[in-house]
Image (tube, rainbow, N blue to C red; front, top):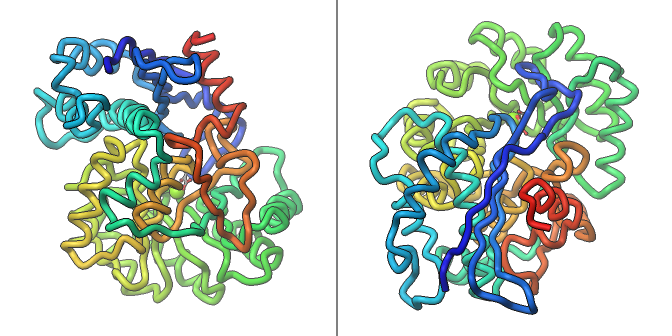
Length: 391
Ligand SMILES: O=C([O-])CC(=O)C(=O)O
Ligand SMILES: [Mg+2]
Protein backbone atom coordinates (compact mmCIF):
# COMPACT_ATOMS: atom_id res chain seq x y z
CA UNK A 1 0.00 0.00 0.00
CA UNK A 2 1.36 3.43 -0.96
CA UNK A 3 0.08 6.97 -0.80
CA UNK A 4 0.09 8.07 -4.44
CA UNK A 5 -1.18 11.64 -4.21
CA UNK A 6 -2.32 14.21 -1.65
CA UNK A 7 -4.61 16.91 -2.99
CA UNK A 8 -5.69 19.99 -1.11
CA UNK A 9 -7.64 23.13 -1.80
CA UNK A 10 -9.02 26.22 -0.11
CA UNK A 11 -12.81 25.75 -0.31
CA UNK A 12 -15.42 28.40 0.44
CA UNK A 13 -17.42 28.04 3.65
CA UNK A 14 -19.09 31.40 3.27
CA UNK A 15 -22.49 32.49 4.54
CA UNK A 16 -24.25 35.68 5.58
CA UNK A 17 -24.39 34.80 9.27
CA UNK A 18 -22.32 36.17 12.17
CA UNK A 19 -21.47 35.30 15.72
CA UNK A 20 -20.54 37.94 18.32
CA UNK A 21 -17.03 38.21 16.88
CA UNK A 22 -16.93 37.41 13.18
CA UNK A 23 -19.01 37.33 10.03
CA UNK A 24 -18.73 34.18 7.91
CA UNK A 25 -18.95 36.13 4.63
CA UNK A 26 -15.43 35.27 3.52
CA UNK A 27 -14.85 32.03 5.44
CA UNK A 28 -12.80 29.28 3.77
CA UNK A 29 -11.59 25.86 4.88
CA UNK A 30 -8.84 23.37 3.98
CA UNK A 31 -10.10 20.31 2.11
CA UNK A 32 -7.73 17.37 1.68
CA UNK A 33 -7.76 13.98 -0.08
CA UNK A 34 -5.10 11.30 0.47
CA UNK A 35 -5.13 8.82 -2.43
CA UNK A 36 -3.57 5.35 -2.42
CA UNK A 37 -2.73 2.63 -4.92
CA UNK A 38 -5.23 0.28 -3.23
CA UNK A 39 -8.30 -0.35 -5.36
CA UNK A 40 -11.55 -1.66 -3.88
CA UNK A 41 -14.80 -2.07 -5.79
CA UNK A 42 -13.12 -0.47 -8.78
CA UNK A 43 -12.13 2.70 -6.91
CA UNK A 44 -8.92 3.93 -5.35
CA UNK A 45 -9.19 3.95 -1.55
CA UNK A 46 -9.00 7.64 -0.61
CA UNK A 47 -9.21 9.42 2.76
CA UNK A 48 -10.91 12.81 3.03
CA UNK A 49 -10.51 15.58 5.56
CA UNK A 50 -11.34 19.20 6.17
CA UNK A 51 -10.67 21.68 8.92
CA UNK A 52 -14.07 22.79 10.18
CA UNK A 53 -15.20 26.41 10.43
CA UNK A 54 -13.85 29.58 11.91
CA UNK A 55 -10.19 29.71 10.92
CA UNK A 56 -9.76 30.06 7.11
CA UNK A 57 -7.79 27.75 4.79
CA UNK A 58 -3.99 27.72 4.69
CA UNK A 59 -3.05 26.27 1.28
CA UNK A 60 0.37 27.93 1.44
CA UNK A 61 1.39 26.14 4.63
CA UNK A 62 0.16 22.82 3.27
CA UNK A 63 1.98 23.24 -0.05
CA UNK A 64 5.23 24.70 1.21
CA UNK A 65 5.78 22.93 4.50
CA UNK A 66 3.63 19.95 5.39
CA UNK A 67 3.10 18.04 2.17
CA UNK A 68 6.80 18.13 1.17
CA UNK A 69 7.59 16.38 4.48
CA UNK A 70 5.25 13.52 3.55
CA UNK A 71 6.51 13.35 -0.03
CA UNK A 72 10.11 13.18 1.16
CA UNK A 73 9.49 10.54 3.86
CA UNK A 74 10.36 6.89 3.26
CA UNK A 75 6.91 5.45 2.35
CA UNK A 76 7.51 2.45 4.64
CA UNK A 77 7.95 4.81 7.61
CA UNK A 78 4.32 5.93 7.23
CA UNK A 79 2.87 2.40 7.53
CA UNK A 80 1.67 0.54 10.60
CA UNK A 81 2.93 -2.85 11.76
CA UNK A 82 0.78 -4.72 9.20
CA UNK A 83 2.65 -2.94 6.39
CA UNK A 84 -0.71 -2.65 4.65
CA UNK A 85 -2.18 0.37 6.32
CA UNK A 86 -1.16 3.93 6.99
CA UNK A 87 -0.14 4.73 10.58
CA UNK A 88 -1.82 8.05 11.53
CA UNK A 89 0.58 8.66 14.43
CA UNK A 90 3.64 8.09 12.19
CA UNK A 91 2.21 10.51 9.62
CA UNK A 92 1.60 13.06 12.38
CA UNK A 93 5.19 12.80 13.65
CA UNK A 94 6.48 13.28 10.10
CA UNK A 95 4.30 16.36 9.61
CA UNK A 96 5.51 17.86 12.89
CA UNK A 97 9.23 17.25 12.33
CA UNK A 98 11.17 20.52 12.69
CA UNK A 99 8.25 22.32 14.34
CA UNK A 100 9.06 24.11 17.60
CA UNK A 101 6.75 23.71 20.59
CA UNK A 102 4.25 26.49 21.30
CA UNK A 103 2.78 29.01 18.89
CA UNK A 104 -0.14 26.76 17.99
CA UNK A 105 -1.47 29.03 15.29
CA UNK A 106 -2.36 28.40 11.71
CA UNK A 107 -0.45 25.11 11.40
CA UNK A 108 -2.77 23.26 13.78
CA UNK A 109 -5.73 23.16 11.41
CA UNK A 110 -3.64 22.30 8.32
CA UNK A 111 -2.55 19.25 10.25
CA UNK A 112 -6.10 18.80 11.54
CA UNK A 113 -7.43 18.45 7.99
CA UNK A 114 -4.61 16.11 6.94
CA UNK A 115 -4.96 14.02 10.09
CA UNK A 116 -8.73 13.67 9.48
CA UNK A 117 -8.03 12.38 5.96
CA UNK A 118 -5.38 9.97 7.23
CA UNK A 119 -7.68 8.50 9.92
CA UNK A 120 -10.48 8.21 7.35
CA UNK A 121 -8.06 6.35 5.08
CA UNK A 122 -6.78 4.15 7.92
CA UNK A 123 -10.32 3.08 8.85
CA UNK A 124 -11.26 2.49 5.21
CA UNK A 125 -8.20 0.31 4.62
CA UNK A 126 -9.08 -1.60 7.82
CA UNK A 127 -12.63 -1.99 6.46
CA UNK A 128 -14.23 -0.56 9.63
CA UNK A 129 -16.08 2.55 10.74
CA UNK A 130 -13.65 4.84 12.56
CA UNK A 131 -15.67 4.73 15.78
CA UNK A 132 -15.18 0.96 16.10
CA UNK A 133 -11.41 1.36 15.69
CA UNK A 134 -11.38 4.04 18.39
CA UNK A 135 -13.45 1.85 20.67
CA UNK A 136 -11.23 -1.21 20.19
CA UNK A 137 -7.90 0.60 20.38
CA UNK A 138 -8.49 3.30 22.98
CA UNK A 139 -11.57 2.34 24.96
CA UNK A 140 -11.37 -1.37 25.80
CA UNK A 141 -14.02 -2.21 23.18
CA UNK A 142 -16.65 -0.04 24.86
CA UNK A 143 -18.73 2.44 22.88
CA UNK A 144 -22.00 4.33 23.06
CA UNK A 145 -24.91 3.02 21.00
CA UNK A 146 -26.51 6.45 21.07
CA UNK A 147 -24.60 9.74 21.13
CA UNK A 148 -25.92 13.04 22.46
CA UNK A 149 -25.87 15.63 19.66
CA UNK A 150 -26.92 19.25 19.72
CA UNK A 151 -27.23 21.86 16.97
CA UNK A 152 -24.91 24.84 17.08
CA UNK A 153 -27.16 27.49 15.57
CA UNK A 154 -29.05 30.63 16.52
CA UNK A 155 -26.63 32.81 14.54
CA UNK A 156 -27.13 36.51 13.94
CA UNK A 157 -28.13 37.69 10.47
CA UNK A 158 -28.97 41.21 9.38
CA UNK A 159 -32.50 40.20 8.38
CA UNK A 160 -33.18 37.73 11.23
CA UNK A 161 -35.71 38.69 13.88
CA UNK A 162 -36.78 36.90 17.06
CA UNK A 163 -39.57 35.09 15.24
CA UNK A 164 -37.06 33.55 12.88
CA UNK A 165 -34.85 32.53 15.77
CA UNK A 166 -37.85 30.88 17.44
CA UNK A 167 -38.75 29.08 14.19
CA UNK A 168 -35.16 27.83 13.92
CA UNK A 169 -35.23 26.46 17.49
CA UNK A 170 -38.63 24.83 16.92
CA UNK A 171 -37.24 23.28 13.72
CA UNK A 172 -34.39 21.67 15.68
CA UNK A 173 -36.89 20.40 18.23
CA UNK A 174 -39.10 18.95 15.51
CA UNK A 175 -36.07 17.26 13.95
CA UNK A 176 -35.51 15.41 17.26
CA UNK A 177 -32.85 17.54 18.97
CA UNK A 178 -33.22 18.37 22.66
CA UNK A 179 -30.34 20.70 23.63
CA UNK A 180 -29.93 23.57 21.12
CA UNK A 181 -27.38 26.39 21.04
CA UNK A 182 -27.71 30.04 20.05
CA UNK A 183 -25.31 32.93 19.67
CA UNK A 184 -25.14 35.77 22.20
CA UNK A 185 -22.88 38.75 22.82
CA UNK A 186 -23.53 40.41 19.45
CA UNK A 187 -26.27 42.76 20.73
CA UNK A 188 -26.91 44.69 23.93
CA UNK A 189 -27.59 42.57 27.01
CA UNK A 190 -31.23 43.70 26.97
CA UNK A 191 -31.70 42.64 23.33
CA UNK A 192 -29.93 39.33 23.84
CA UNK A 193 -32.10 38.62 26.88
CA UNK A 194 -35.22 39.00 24.71
CA UNK A 195 -33.76 36.48 22.24
CA UNK A 196 -32.80 34.06 25.03
CA UNK A 197 -36.24 34.28 26.63
CA UNK A 198 -37.97 33.57 23.32
CA UNK A 199 -35.65 30.67 22.46
CA UNK A 200 -36.00 29.14 25.94
CA UNK A 201 -39.77 29.36 25.63
CA UNK A 202 -39.68 27.72 22.20
CA UNK A 203 -37.62 24.85 23.64
CA UNK A 204 -39.84 24.54 26.69
CA UNK A 205 -37.08 25.44 29.19
CA UNK A 206 -33.76 27.25 29.50
CA UNK A 207 -32.23 23.98 30.66
CA UNK A 208 -32.06 22.71 27.08
CA UNK A 209 -30.73 26.00 25.70
CA UNK A 210 -26.98 26.67 25.47
CA UNK A 211 -25.63 30.13 24.63
CA UNK A 212 -22.33 30.94 22.92
CA UNK A 213 -20.59 34.32 23.28
CA UNK A 214 -17.63 33.34 21.05
CA UNK A 215 -15.13 34.99 23.38
CA UNK A 216 -16.76 38.40 23.18
CA UNK A 217 -16.93 39.47 26.82
CA UNK A 218 -14.44 41.13 29.14
CA UNK A 219 -14.68 39.88 32.73
CA UNK A 220 -17.15 42.54 33.95
CA UNK A 221 -19.41 41.96 30.94
CA UNK A 222 -19.22 38.20 31.38
CA UNK A 223 -20.24 38.52 35.03
CA UNK A 224 -23.12 40.88 34.18
CA UNK A 225 -24.30 38.47 31.48
CA UNK A 226 -23.97 35.47 33.82
CA UNK A 227 -25.99 37.25 36.53
CA UNK A 228 -28.71 38.12 34.03
CA UNK A 229 -29.07 34.58 32.61
CA UNK A 230 -28.67 32.64 35.86
CA UNK A 231 -32.45 32.22 36.37
CA UNK A 232 -32.73 30.41 33.02
CA UNK A 233 -30.50 27.57 34.34
CA UNK A 234 -29.05 27.31 30.83
CA UNK A 235 -27.51 24.06 29.57
CA UNK A 236 -24.22 25.97 29.37
CA UNK A 237 -22.66 29.41 28.80
CA UNK A 238 -20.02 28.96 26.08
CA UNK A 239 -16.77 30.86 25.47
CA UNK A 240 -17.59 33.79 27.74
CA UNK A 241 -14.22 35.46 27.12
CA UNK A 242 -10.98 35.20 25.19
CA UNK A 243 -9.94 31.55 24.78
CA UNK A 244 -6.58 32.14 26.46
CA UNK A 245 -7.94 34.23 29.34
CA UNK A 246 -7.91 31.47 31.95
CA UNK A 247 -8.18 34.06 34.71
CA UNK A 248 -11.53 35.26 33.30
CA UNK A 249 -13.00 31.76 33.49
CA UNK A 250 -11.56 31.20 36.95
CA UNK A 251 -13.17 34.42 38.21
CA UNK A 252 -16.45 33.85 36.40
CA UNK A 253 -17.15 30.45 37.96
CA UNK A 254 -17.19 32.23 41.34
CA UNK A 255 -20.18 34.21 40.11
CA UNK A 256 -22.05 31.54 38.17
CA UNK A 257 -23.28 28.20 39.53
CA UNK A 258 -24.30 26.68 36.19
CA UNK A 259 -22.15 25.16 33.45
CA UNK A 260 -19.49 27.01 31.46
CA UNK A 261 -18.18 25.41 28.24
CA UNK A 262 -15.07 26.39 26.33
CA UNK A 263 -11.99 25.14 24.47
CA UNK A 264 -12.86 25.27 20.76
CA UNK A 265 -10.06 27.79 20.21
CA UNK A 266 -7.37 25.91 22.13
CA UNK A 267 -5.23 24.03 19.65
CA UNK A 268 -2.89 21.83 21.64
CA UNK A 269 -2.99 19.49 24.61
CA UNK A 270 -0.72 21.94 26.46
CA UNK A 271 -3.27 24.74 26.03
CA UNK A 272 -6.08 22.46 27.17
CA UNK A 273 -4.02 21.43 30.19
CA UNK A 274 -3.62 25.07 31.09
CA UNK A 275 -7.36 25.66 30.80
CA UNK A 276 -8.12 22.66 33.03
CA UNK A 277 -5.39 23.53 35.54
CA UNK A 278 -5.81 27.31 35.73
CA UNK A 279 -9.23 28.13 34.24
CA UNK A 280 -11.17 27.27 37.39
CA UNK A 281 -13.47 24.92 35.48
CA UNK A 282 -15.29 22.32 37.55
CA UNK A 283 -14.91 18.71 36.31
CA UNK A 284 -18.41 17.84 37.54
CA UNK A 285 -20.19 20.91 36.09
CA UNK A 286 -18.37 22.40 33.09
CA UNK A 287 -17.56 21.21 29.57
CA UNK A 288 -14.43 21.11 27.40
CA UNK A 289 -14.96 21.57 23.67
CA UNK A 290 -11.83 20.99 21.58
CA UNK A 291 -12.30 20.72 17.81
CA UNK A 292 -10.19 17.79 16.58
CA UNK A 293 -10.13 19.17 13.03
CA UNK A 294 -8.63 22.45 14.27
CA UNK A 295 -6.31 21.25 17.04
CA UNK A 296 -3.84 19.07 15.11
CA UNK A 297 -6.38 16.32 14.53
CA UNK A 298 -7.68 13.25 16.28
CA UNK A 299 -4.07 12.22 16.97
CA UNK A 300 -3.49 15.27 19.20
CA UNK A 301 -6.99 15.12 20.69
CA UNK A 302 -6.30 11.57 21.92
CA UNK A 303 -3.30 12.95 23.84
CA UNK A 304 -5.48 15.79 25.12
CA UNK A 305 -8.08 13.33 26.47
CA UNK A 306 -5.41 11.24 28.20
CA UNK A 307 -3.84 14.28 29.84
CA UNK A 308 -7.26 15.55 30.90
CA UNK A 309 -8.04 12.22 32.56
CA UNK A 310 -4.78 12.54 34.50
CA UNK A 311 -6.02 15.94 35.70
CA UNK A 312 -9.25 14.36 36.94
CA UNK A 313 -11.40 15.16 33.91
CA UNK A 314 -13.62 12.38 32.63
CA UNK A 315 -13.97 12.01 28.85
CA UNK A 316 -17.68 12.48 29.45
CA UNK A 317 -17.04 16.19 30.04
CA UNK A 318 -15.76 16.58 26.46
CA UNK A 319 -18.13 17.76 23.73
CA UNK A 320 -16.15 18.21 20.50
CA UNK A 321 -16.83 21.42 18.60
CA UNK A 322 -17.27 21.60 14.86
CA UNK A 323 -20.42 19.66 13.99
CA UNK A 324 -18.59 17.12 11.84
CA UNK A 325 -18.61 13.34 11.62
CA UNK A 326 -15.12 13.04 13.10
CA UNK A 327 -16.44 14.44 16.40
CA UNK A 328 -19.37 12.04 16.17
CA UNK A 329 -17.10 9.00 15.67
CA UNK A 330 -15.01 10.11 18.64
CA UNK A 331 -18.03 10.65 20.86
CA UNK A 332 -19.31 7.12 20.11
CA UNK A 333 -16.04 5.17 20.17
CA UNK A 334 -14.38 7.01 23.06
CA UNK A 335 -17.60 7.57 25.01
CA UNK A 336 -17.39 11.35 25.22
CA UNK A 337 -20.26 13.49 26.49
CA UNK A 338 -21.64 14.02 22.99
CA UNK A 339 -20.87 16.25 20.05
CA UNK A 340 -22.02 19.36 18.22
CA UNK A 341 -23.98 19.21 14.98
CA UNK A 342 -24.72 21.88 12.35
CA UNK A 343 -27.91 20.66 10.71
CA UNK A 344 -28.67 23.97 9.06
CA UNK A 345 -25.34 25.78 8.88
CA UNK A 346 -21.91 25.35 7.30
CA UNK A 347 -23.41 23.16 4.57
CA UNK A 348 -22.32 20.74 3.25
CA UNK A 349 -19.57 20.24 5.87
CA UNK A 350 -21.85 20.42 8.92
CA UNK A 351 -24.25 17.73 10.08
CA UNK A 352 -24.19 13.96 9.87
CA UNK A 353 -25.19 11.22 7.41
CA UNK A 354 -28.29 12.25 5.49
CA UNK A 355 -30.53 9.46 6.74
CA UNK A 356 -29.35 9.38 10.37
CA UNK A 357 -32.39 9.92 12.61
CA UNK A 358 -32.18 12.16 15.67
CA UNK A 359 -34.12 10.46 18.45
CA UNK A 360 -34.62 12.30 21.72
CA UNK A 361 -31.43 14.31 21.08
CA UNK A 362 -29.30 11.27 20.25
CA UNK A 363 -28.06 9.51 17.12
CA UNK A 364 -26.97 5.95 16.42
CA UNK A 365 -23.96 5.51 14.17
CA UNK A 366 -23.83 3.49 10.96
CA UNK A 367 -22.17 0.09 11.50
CA UNK A 368 -21.14 -0.87 8.01
CA UNK A 369 -19.66 2.24 6.41
CA UNK A 370 -15.84 2.07 6.59
CA UNK A 371 -14.05 5.28 7.50
CA UNK A 372 -15.53 8.44 9.00
CA UNK A 373 -18.75 8.04 7.03
CA UNK A 374 -18.54 11.06 4.72
CA UNK A 375 -19.78 8.93 1.81
CA UNK A 376 -23.14 8.88 3.59
CA UNK A 377 -23.34 12.63 2.89
CA UNK A 378 -23.37 12.76 -0.92
CA UNK A 379 -23.55 16.58 -1.05
CA UNK A 380 -20.35 16.78 1.01
CA UNK A 381 -18.58 14.22 -1.18
CA UNK A 382 -19.69 15.99 -4.37
CA UNK A 383 -18.45 19.35 -3.08
CA UNK A 384 -15.07 18.06 -1.89
CA UNK A 385 -14.44 16.03 -5.05
CA UNK A 386 -15.42 18.98 -7.24
CA UNK A 387 -13.12 21.38 -5.38
CA UNK A 388 -10.28 18.85 -5.43
CA UNK A 389 -10.86 18.18 -9.17
CA UNK A 390 -11.22 14.48 -8.47
CA UNK A 391 -14.02 13.88 -10.97
O1 LIG B 1 -19.61 30.53 15.44
C1 LIG B 1 -18.59 29.83 15.52
O2 LIG B 1 -17.44 30.30 15.39
C2 LIG B 1 -18.74 28.38 15.82
C3 LIG B 1 -18.91 28.11 17.26
O3 LIG B 1 -18.54 28.87 18.12
C4 LIG B 1 -19.55 26.87 17.71
O4 LIG B 1 -20.05 26.12 16.90
O5 LIG B 1 -19.56 26.65 18.91
MG1 LIG C 1 -18.65 28.01 20.13
